Amino acid sequence: MLRILFFVIMALATGFAHATDFWTEVQTTKASGISFNQINAGLSANLSGLVGYYAFGQSTNNGYQQIYAGPKVNPTNWLEFGVAVGAEKTASSDWMKRTAVYAWVGKAKISLLGVYENGGTGPWHKLVLNYKVTPELTLGIQSQSYLGTGPRVEYSLGKNVSLWGTALKGENGPTNMVAIKIKF
Image 1 (cartoon, one colour):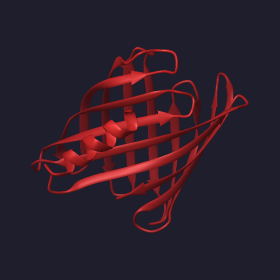
Image 2 (cartoon, rainbow, N blue to C red):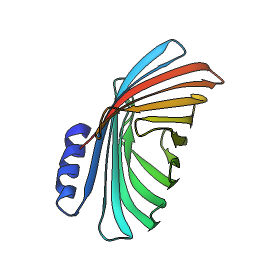
Image 3 (tube, rainbow, N blue to C red):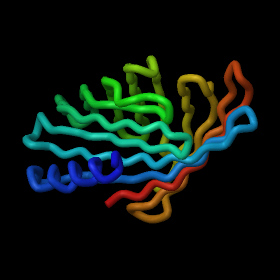
């Protein structure tokens, strides 16, 4: 149900923007001997040079799902931030309110993305600091709630497809994540 709703919202929203960015990502995570898969998808667009909107959805094979959307602001070409409201559910819960904020800062070859979410399942954060070594290769550091902090590598296979992976170390031991991201 969430997947259908998410893609309907995304399809309708694209009609209101001049340039819409849509991406999807298939990710596998292995932490403390447990593996799970997830599909992430995002949409963003500028309605004017300064203001726009974004939406994010996620579904995992362990029953967690979330979707949220809200406005974003681009005060400069190197700064963007947004706020959102939506809903989440686990395999054992009904839908609960979920909120999110994010900020992106980037100049030349360096960028930093920070995301903070909160709701029924509690707070969550992700920070990704990247340095673009070549047009294809990006190296960085990722920190994520419950999983830890560690190095991150991303390799672009052309303009619209990239592979990334990270090896995080946290209180609960090591976590490895790999993903393929496709931009439309």
